[in-house]
Length: 177
Image (tube, rainbow, N blue to C red):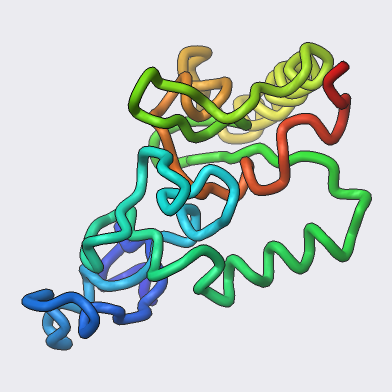
């Protein structure tokens, strides 16, 4: 969209508001439209009952879209993941808040039941990778990410239903069992 006019835009610019009676579908509301691409995946989605996205408000900051993979950006990422089997895991960097995270990223509110955690070996690998990456960021930029902001999304931030890291899966590098 524009990093100059509305720098906090975290969604694409698709206007689904016409499907929601009374929603702001007028062009003046364009800063509120769009799908949060990191809520548009199918694993642990709001459509499956996971917390951390909206399927009922086209102007929500975490609008998941009308259905899973409704957006080409999410489908493109799914294509890359399925086409290149050498991609084994995903980690998320949120530079704005200083977070470095990995799966699980979503939970169901009732009982706070998360998606499966990675195996112990994968968690160790994520920890080691995070440490290496964060040390490099600090040496290059002079900034740091606090340890409390590093770990599984659902533990250090909040539930993010339908996020990209969960889509790839937590146990592909070192499978459970």
